[in-house]
Image (tube, rainbow, N blue to C red):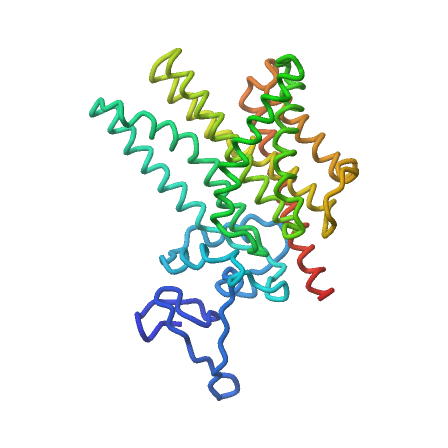
Length: 352
């Protein structure tokens, strides 16, 4: 369907041009329809019905990554989550969202990092160093966070709130970890590290998702991912600075590179899993401590702690293949939770 206003080619099922916003007149039995609606669940409008599925197939999820998108599409993504733009539950479809913005965010982050690298290494301007560390530390965690934000089908969390969770949740979880380490007399064996850091992030996640507004599994995934992204980026920044002070430039870039490669399977995914598990056990109820004893929550928390402990193990964690295997496990469980979250929305729709 070509737009008569800007000549942009759109999918046949859209009710407005994704480039200029021009509304289309669609015919039904030879008569013009004058009723139009704006679906904030934009991914439903742009995806043909034949592609919709609740099955966890990669081609269903990433089918829009390599398509051309306009600035208008990105702008519509960022307006969701407010009191005026959160769709009703009946308008939310229990189908796989089709995220794409996260890939653009990653490309932009790489270009910015390249700019800082050029300024620091070719022009020898040390003023570029802080930016290089910050962008290098945030690039991958923030990209993964955008993916979780696009997958949040209820679209009830505004982007400014996500940023709040990243910075406030990130620093609170790090401080909580320091408190727990102090209680354990700075015990640094892998099991202790896994328990301490995952407990710190889980406590922080619960602080935010305890409110009844965040009652969906997909909400827990997003908020957990935001806190995990903050924790991961702040930690990487610290390690990068220490690597620079101890071994110079090569150590700095190696630290940023390897921590970025494995960032998708680390703190971001682990915190997302515990957030989703807690929301699944909480449902619409107010927070009570006995929710933490729920078996469905405990088994996910134990799994996360075990993966973290193996990741930090001096014998197993030193092998990249082990970390890659842990990443695969993490994301298999993540996609299972996404599927469960979409099914949850479908059941709630039937109950409405």
